[in-house]
Image (cartoon, rainbow, N blue to C red):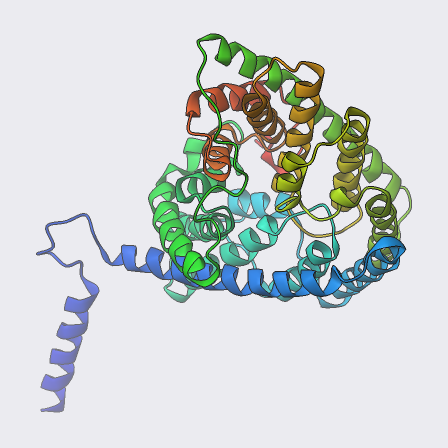
Length: 422
């Protein structure tokens, strides 16, 4: 009798383990796994954003000269967290792990990434929360994949889907977030990971839904640049011209970052000393140019609404590039996409003041698209992200600008792990 029961149990388990043969749709159980990952990613992003907002408001109380010791202390604390808990790495490590480590993102350093990035972003560093979210949600995808014993491309796809869910939650663009998670991996052959596009898109949609319910962020344009009227075929030519200027400053940012990297790596010093020095330098810049503090989420609107003189705009442009470079090279944790958008918006305002006959919205969006595509080599997702974030309803000019920035990018990419490896 016991033997019969065991046989029945084995039969039932085998039936459950087989695909549902009578299902006439593409829908399958893997869809539920992608959706689950998206829901978890949205919850993680929501909790992270709530913590970031709370800490930012607490630290924003300190102004004037006090910003220098505050950012120095936060830099020191972030460095100590990285030193004692573990180095979570940067976007270079994420790209390398996805490409060469069978898509496995190790979640063991997530506590270090979350704590250090919260301090760095909330205190006013010129890096945003997108990179920490991408790493945490991507490694969550790896963890879930291992839990369900996925291997090979299935595990890699789930890790990429996790990355997309974190990126989408912040920017509110499921398609843009999905494409970004593919484009950032390989600047020449994004289609190499085409199998991950549907998992990434599904996870992004569910992540966006949960994050919007928690935070109500990303439900509309963050920076309103919708006041644009198409004036003819020459607009595409103007977009390319503005993008050339944006790409030039993309090069300037890359060379500035390499300069500060060579300074910080000249002598082997502990990470907490590097972050301390970075905090002091960033505090000094923020003291003289307060609008350069933080990663630009709210500051771009302040920049667009303020009537800044041309000389001040030039100073903001130069010192924002320096601030991002210092933040990246001194060990502070975060992402540089929104800060680069800030640089592009500043450049657009400068060009418009030099040539008042230009369309302000077109020049700003073109510069924002070009500089980001030049540095990150993500023209497709940059186009969709900017259209979502700015309310700019005309895709083609943004696409022209993004492609111009992409094709004028340095042959050696800023994210070194994007390079071909035989």
